[in-house]
Image (spheres, rainbow, N blue to C red):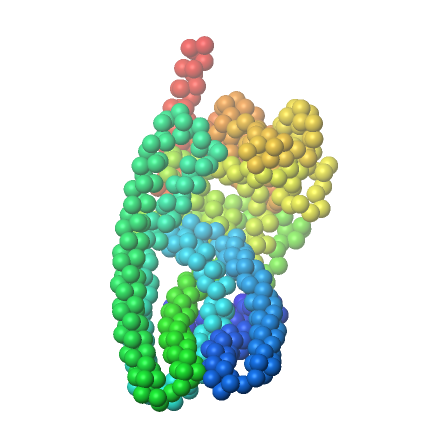
Length: 606
């Protein structure tokens, strides 16, 4: 569980305090035992160093006062015992502290992963959201480190108060000098931090491109193209180009950091030099004894360290707050679809059902031109509908709108007269079995892939779906049958299927789902026209009683459909049966005759 969104903060710009509370409350929810190490870590990290600088004073005074060897040895023994006990406690506290830190980073990454997988699909393609996602790794680390930095900040605060109380007894001027120099150092570090935050967007898109190019060069499916088309040098030069740009920004950041460090070192030299000069003057003028001199000397050194450390810790907390802001901004990306309870889905008596798309338009994020332009269409219950048209006509976008992957820019989609926006989107997905153009094989067993789940797999149904999809012969050749693992590059005993076999496999998955609406978005591109036509005809028979939508660029494969929609530039240019559109002698007929001409030429050549 994470802290909810502050409704008054619409820009997702939370304060350092709010982000600190966010991180601490998440840790409280994930592992309360983490806090048991807070108090001993704070106390021991302050008082152990204090004891270490007080011990020489005590020992020197005992020696100077000519105390007995027994007294001196007793003090040494007691002091050593205290150090051993407190050291053990400190180590145990630190071990507990560190043992769970890494798990918090994993928890934050899990939150981001769950968010990405559950957010509206449209957001996963939005460049702005993808830039936010790029920041989530640093945000995860910031969430992990924020609690530790807060703990260290409290340690420094206690250290400053304790050591400052000692130094003010020596000379208030030393305390003022140390504080002023530290304040200057703070403003320098703050300047660098704010510059990095302001400039971060300049390199975020570079990081995303470098990551994409790296993944592309390692992608198994692209390995053939890289070799055959000599893309290696091109990929390397493009990657190097973006890396050089990224290194340029890194160098600017490094230069500013080095300037800040130089100022810090100079100020430390001046303030410590003045403080030590005052202390040496007091010793030479017999205002302090040797033991007190050693103690005060250690106190000044410690106080200087606490001041420098607290500035560094505060800047770390501020930097972590910026990263957590970006993390929360990603976690709070708004979804347009309904993720609440929603309307109940149509029951079996209402299946198949009609689907109405009324005045639908869609514009991709960052674009101005509609891909779907004020389109209206009613798909009758149980109808077999074909969507055809040239590439770029908007066919795939139409499918994604229909099955709930995209949210219409304007217009409504209705199921049996009820607005699809009112259904829970995850339940709405169950109504569609879609086979897209892109085929992505997941490295799991065939049974799990076809069933879409590792739970309650109906093996008989898997076998039946594979058979109907035409994969019987392939299954017979596999020694492990449907328990064979897919993707050779992942598993030693994995297999790779041909393009046509992959298409049949995803068709089998669609059959297994047995959804009321089945959509085939040009899934047969790797098949020859005859095999495609036969497969579509088979699906026509298999989907009897369901609403079926077929998208194909080969028009001969759509003749069995009840109705054909010819799309052009995001709207319906023609509508009717195959025979009606042929008689009309319009766009559809022209495209059909052109394709038939090429098929006929191929037959004549043979």
